[in-house]
Each structure stands twice: as C-alpha cells, then as structure tokens.
Length: 189
Image (cartoon, helix red, strand yellow):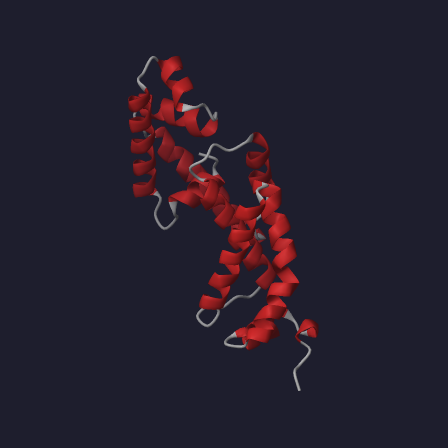
C-alpha cells in the first residue's frame, strides 16, 4: 500500500525522499510550478527557467542525504534565486531585474548579514584604482556597454575589458566565502 505523499509535511517528505522516487516526485509536484513562476518573474525566458528549476531539483535529489534543510520552500526559492543570478551574472541587468532582485527578501536572519556583505563589497569597489573603479561602476552599476564606456572615457574597448576583468579578479580575491556570481547578483555589479 503506497502512502499518500501529498498529505505529508515537507520535513516528512524530505526524510522519505532519500532514495524514494515517489516521495521526491511529491516534492517536485508540490513546488515545480511555484519555482518556475518565481524564476520566470526574474528572467522571463521559458527554457532557461525550466532548466534552472530542473537543476535545483537535481541538486536537491543529490544533496538530500547530506543536507539538513529546515524550511524546504525557503531553501528551494533561495536556490532558484541564486541559480538565476548566476545565470545572468555576466549579462547586463535590466532595470526591472535589478529592482526585482533587490526586492526579494531573504530569510529574516540573513538581512543583516546581507547588508554587511553589501557594505563590504562596496568598500572593496572603492579600493579599486580610480580608472578601474570608474569603468567598473559604469559597466555594472550604470549598465553601460563597453563601447559606451570606451567612448565616454576616451579608452579603447580592450582597456575597458581589462579594467572590468581586473575589478572582478580583485573582488573575487576579497570576497571570502561568497562566489562572484552571488556577489554580482546581490549588488548588481
């Protein structure tokens, strides 16, 4: 007799989902549509959003045995948020994407951590050499193209690329445990 997985709490499903395909499918059925909608609000490209949600579920299946997940829904939403952010980290953000990413609240106990992190990253940006800092801010904060920056600052496109690369390298080096993809998505670099 198969249990009715749809009536179980998330914590019970997670315990059963370790190696139990039916329990895992119940988690998938419960959250797939919501996670896809969440990803689509940020990125608005169906195929990419489907892939991202699929990757999150694959990761959950692979890591479920080793992970201690207290709030499954929050865990999945945060995983989707970071996967989308990582996907678009090298792209220019649209104003709507920046506003949406900034409006997404993290769990309450992470808000202070995020503010401290953002402050630290902005401090690190201020430590960049003047021209490098100027180019980097124009690129990642003001969303100017490399060509626009080169024209505005009377630089070659290659010099602009070098400044951006140097800035990212510097931030990676000083980011500690955070991945540059997360950094880029959180402070819209």
